[in-house]
Each structure stands twice: as structure tokens, then as C-alpha cells.
Image (tube, rainbow over all chains, first blue to last red; front, side, top):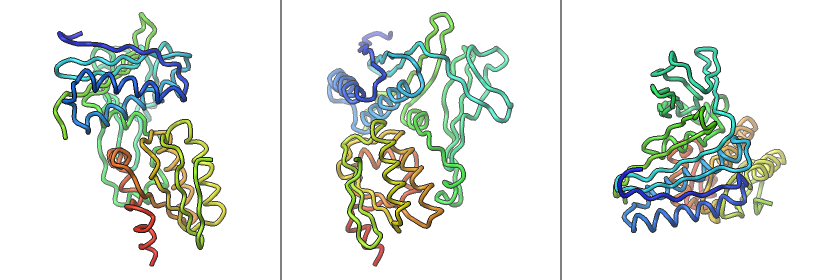
Length: 191
Length: 112
């Protein structure tokens, strides 16, 4: 933790009916600890990301609990979701290969398309420590409404988190058998 | 039931009842929308006047409904979006996919 960093730790039941309470606890903590200097735009993005991290836990972790960590320092707000489920994996059609953890060294510093919608491509860039950073490339289709019929993704969770966060990453710890999703927000003062 | 529905000349005004348009309600919303479209609507105007926040699951259901509607020449308009909801749709560029109006009245005026 950085100097002056404070942290809230919450165990989440992975039940959809508990999302609202967890969301309220986290946002109340953030508002209190930032003493009102966080703009409404950033706070909205934090809520969207928290919602999607919790939804992701319900849909994909296949465990009975997850842990949400909210850390705040002078520069950043950091949201983390930890669970002990199976590591993330995705299919890269250009390599005709499923990428799964632990990552081999030869895949370090490579980028992979997770999915493409009518308007965006979500890319996983594998960093040298085996973690991935999520990136977005925007597309300008000629007719978005027509393209929705063929290729619009209905899976917006990772897209929302990536576009809302200053930085969004994933790491699987083989030692701890733990998934860690981490979303960072710069504490700039926004309207 | 997720939608409060009023029908007038095959134009459906469907108001989302829950404040939280999320994973809890997304499957039922999708099924109700598909039933409305399958029953012969020409246009479905979905009001978000009660909705404080929306998540990816509900957005996914909205897109599934539009995918089901478009080949049947049915359109879906969105009205009465609160700023947070509209900002999220804009973030993932759904504002380019759905026609968005201030309220039912403004949406209905496009039909005149």
C-alpha cells in the first residue's frame, strides 16, 4: 500500500440480491474518505465498475464468495475483486489457441483480441509479469444499427470496466490460486 | 413483472418498474420484451423513468430484444433516461444503436 492509503475489505456472497448493499457500502466509504473532492463523473464510473465486478463474480467465479477491496490514497482509488475460482481463459481466433493461466513466457508482451463488437474491440495485452491489461480500440462502422444484427456483443461487462477505469488489469496467482481483477481511477477533480 | 405496458395502435409504452435494472431482472425483461414484439407491436417505447442504474446484464437483454425486433421491422425507442443511465449507454456507444428521446411525448411526436 502507498503512504496514506486506507483500505476497505468486504466479503461478497456472490448473490445478486446483495449487490445493492455492497455497492452502497463501498460508495459511502469512498465518499467519506475523499471528503467530497471526487467529481460526480468519477463516482459514477466507480459505481459502474463495482457493479460489473460484483456481477462478474456471480456469473463467472463459480465460488460461494468473493472479496472486494477498496483502497484510497492521495492519487488513486483502486477497486479489486479477488476469488479462488478457476483462472480466466479466452480464445484468440488469430492464433487458433485458448489463452489460459499460468501464461508461458513466450506470450509476454503480446496482444490478443477478446472480442469485437460493432463499435469496439476489447484487447488483452499480456505484460511481462504474466498479468493482462485490458485495452479498447474503437471502430467506426458505417451503420451501427445494421451491424448490430451480425456482430454486436451482448457481453458488456469487461467493456464497461475497461472504458470506465484509468487502468484495468487481471492477474492469476498460481501460488495463492487466486484471481485478481484490479481497476484504478485517478483522483482528478471532475465535474 | 418488469414492465408496465400500455398499448395504443400497436405502439407499446413499456415502463421499467424496478429502480435497479440489473442482473436480478435482466432475464425477465428480455422475455417480456420478446413477448411484446412477438405479439405484433410496431414500435416499443421503453421508459427508464424509474431506473436509477443499469448494468451490463440488462444492457445485454436490451440488445437481444433489438436483435429480435429489427428483422421483424419493429423498432425500440428509449425514453426518460436519468443522466447516469444515459452516460453509461453513451460510454459503450449504445446511443448510436438506440433512438433516445426525452419522454414518451417526444418519442410519439416522431410518428406524426
